[in-house]
Image 1: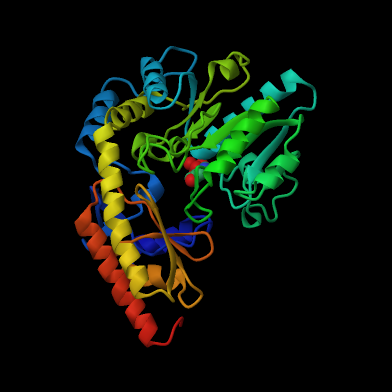
Image 2 (image 1 turned 180 degrees about the horizontal axis):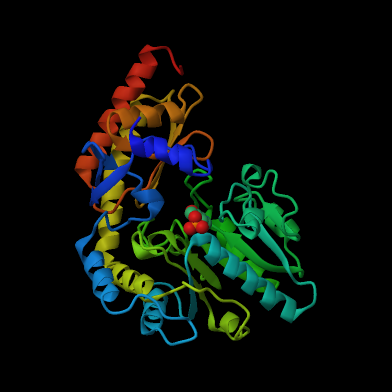
Length: 402
Ligand SMILES: *Cc1c(COP(=O)(O)O)cnc(C)c1O
């Protein structure tokens, strides 16, 4: 155990079960620990460092801003905010932005705006629908909105008037949709929930019903945004336009920033004092955000789809080789899920990948989740698949799960 691992255990509130390595340097999809050991990073800091670690262009933009001014209050004009809002709109839909610092904060703001809009329309129009297996953050409001008990346990009382629908269940959505609903929150691809794309007919029905009942359709794009699924935003995998999207994770490529884009109709109901953030959209955050979005071109998205395909093809071939161990492979751009059957534990696979110096994630029940930096390609797909093949072979020979 290194000093920094021991110090972390002694000094940090134990909210995480941490992998006991300290990554101290990165470049693209490669990272190094304190001892100089190199790893292939297929996590991108959980879908954050989409353009790769220590990207020179992003670094230049942030350090240039750092030498001028870092922060001034949101009580003054910060020109980078309007620029960033315009960039987000040109990639998504026309509207206006609010800037904050994280995904949970972006969803919190979306929730507050949904309730304002609903309550103004009709007293009591403040029920919110979200999906089972969803993930929307860790504040009290966003764990309430999250459709997984494990994140809520012990934190009662939570918010009221938030209800859940099974992802994909048009019947349940129809049954729960009425005049009292002010918003429906969706993730285009449930990330923490297991890398699952919503069925198109379900999303179309959510749009139709929210329109019918004058409710807002909100897409949580915190993980699926900024090119992750091969589209600028995840909802663009469907033929719908949301009223609100929430963005964070990759918007600053590692610099903390969150954003909410809303339609003009939503924005017109907001006024001074209803919401605020001290740090939200400060000079440094906007410098990072603008630099990131200036790079989110059709060419970048094409590359994401091409690299995603490199992983998909190889992982599908691996599934064909080990059909009793891999039950399904899903890849939406570079958001990739590999479901293991009961014979294999994803924890064991992650440990074995780490031994082979590959960093990956888990999601859902028993799913390997890969959200690598966009710098990866065929070579990294090959390396991962070879490692997985070796791991599955040895599990197979040992007669299944240890
Ligand atoms: C990560 C995540 C969040 C929470 O973002 P934080 O920045 O950790 O608050 C919310 N929604 C989704 C879909 C996420 O993946």
